[in-house]
Length: 408
Ligand SMILES: *Cc1c(COP(=O)(O)O)cnc(C)c1O
Image (cartoon, rainbow, N blue to C red; front, side, top):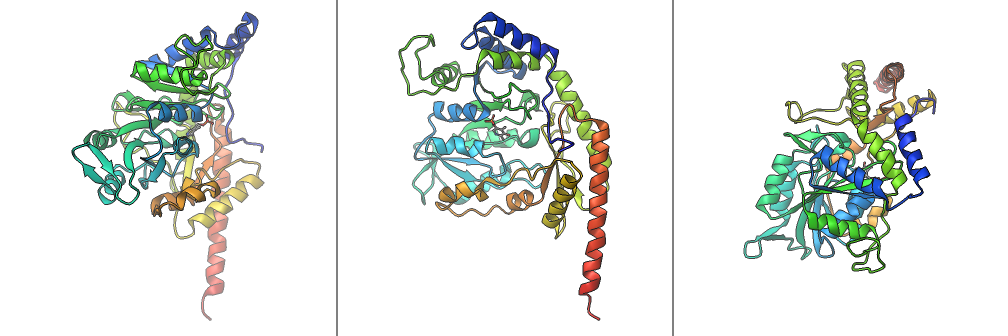
């Protein structure tokens, strides 16, 4: 594609730091891991941070270290990337989906409450919610800060407190986002970030767990390093662990990106604002909402720019946009396709029937446009010009269809 969906923003600083590690001879388990973790924890305002090999690994270790497993249900969203549900399936826990808010596209706190009231019984003696149909216990909520817009954490934390639920945040798309003065990812027992090349900062591949609990951090450090003893070097394995380590090369890249985070985030906000300006006033297209982050102490961190087509032919129009954009050499993606409709998920979905009308309709109408800190204003104008053209072609052919179908 001539205009790509996203591109990493890597400069001389990254090359310098990575080269230094290459020259040092210590490519893994070296000092850059700790440095990246400390700087990251300071940036988001958590007590600790544990670097791992991917965002998926960060989610998996968070779930595992919190003891979420067979017999547990976790309330989460199906409008997400597969990893936020897979981390539960890896551990034998059962994802239960609550529908999303049609405007923010994040899990709806109202739907969380409705699901709890409809499907669970409060066991006051053991202070836990049980599902009489499945016999399992509701253990946690796993909110995903979709596209970098923070979830309504005040309401979610209130439900969690009321029913003794853990919170594990998928903040993989939300580095730099804050809600009521606190960084997305720091509200729960653990939060996960990811550094794939399309994210706000990249380490090529990589992830981070943030937590205020030193015991949880220590357990995650052990689990990422094959369950090794505290010192991390010996061959004494105290847990069944994994190799989820992040190398010093990756961490050097991360340290450099974090030093440049201001200059990585601000072009994203500028490009998003330009998209919103250029696309405003097209009746068939809904623009990203910033509901809940209008105050000075909350902020979205732009991860992707996703529009939605609307009206009775929303899904057809999206198809026409995807074809038309790609024909013009402009990349785009139907993002996210909902998890509960993914082919692999059928085996799990059979356990319980879920109706997720908002998730379904958003999943049929959303479209991610080319977006990164190196997307140029000229590219945005070209993409928006193409969208206007395709929409007006669509209107014309609709009129023709109606004229043909009209009775004589
Ligand atoms: C990127 C992302 C992840 C993590 O992905 P990795 O490729 O494993 O780093 C998890 N959840 C969401 C919502 C994401 O966008």
